Image 1 (cartoon, one colour):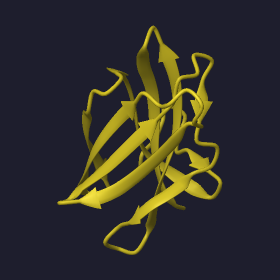
Image 2 (image 1 turned 180 degrees about the vertical axis):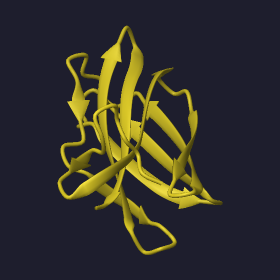
Image 3 (image 1 turned 120 degrees about the vertical axis):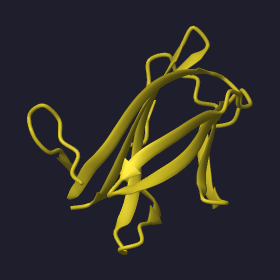
Length: 121
């Protein structure tokens, strides 16, 4: 299955965009996402936690019981932050690597998120 925008497919850094999602969530609220990925369903949780004032923003993820869990801390820039390059977080059953990229804005103490899922083109 190919993801396509109104103008056609999207390729970034020799990777193909297969899914994107936008959402607004409170800090410390867990978001549950189910995304179609090449005929399968990828289940994810995403949470943004308040970080320590002197600690740089960070993110970590792990796969547990069929769910990819993302946790981000200290993402507090109202002007916006992002993950600059597609970042690998796993492999699909056919061996293709799967990546994510993300933009984030803190808006009135809520997290505005644009999440992109990509695979090798």
